[in-house]
Length: 316
Image (tube, rainbow, N blue to C red; front, top):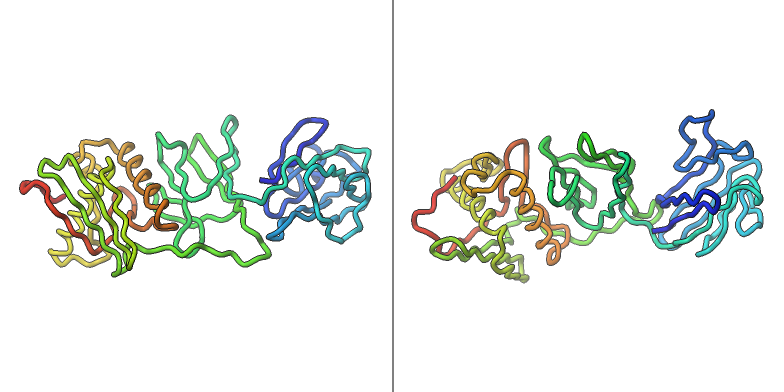
């Protein structure tokens, strides 16, 4: 991800897709842009560095000019940037910023709370940590980003704050603002062409899961999260048999699921996260197998086959 280094202060700045530089309206106030230029020669809206889908370019909109490698950039003209270029805003003898990384932008969570680290968001991420996954951020089927928490599911966009009361990040989307956003084709678990097949040992200590989607079939083998998914699948089957409306099928209270599985709620969240990660390795943007709403969770796949298992297995 493109990075600028202030050669005097050694401050590092990760560039957003459209990253602006400007002087604050008054001392100690917020910058007129993403990065503050704290000297009088800088304009309030001085310059912008942007990703056009192929390269980084600089656009100057200042009074005193912007210099790249000590050469003034023409006003309102785009200047392509390269690795190791040195940029000066307001005069080449002012603070210098060196491009130490010219890579394309990435989706990232930048810390707002002191002491946190930036987090890249490539597919799915949980906050505040994988050991305490209270919040899940992932790309939805329509290509937009969503935040899932106990409060439910909500869309997020670049600049939104996400996190918990004590750990807050700001989300920045690293997609081009010029080129059309393209999303890998995902598969919804609610599709009639999706089937989940569970093979369960009699003592239910071993649960293997195979997912079939059209002409694709993937055996995920025996994994710890599969028993939890099995419990959710049984609830879905029971609700189908009882004629419950599709929108309400399969929902189970988390405290009941915790008692049935012997897992506390935090560990249930960890297992759900691991299950989703395993799916993403095979089926991109395929997270709709699990849905959550306040205090409840369900398995969304409608076509379910369960082979084996205990004859005394109960339904939630």
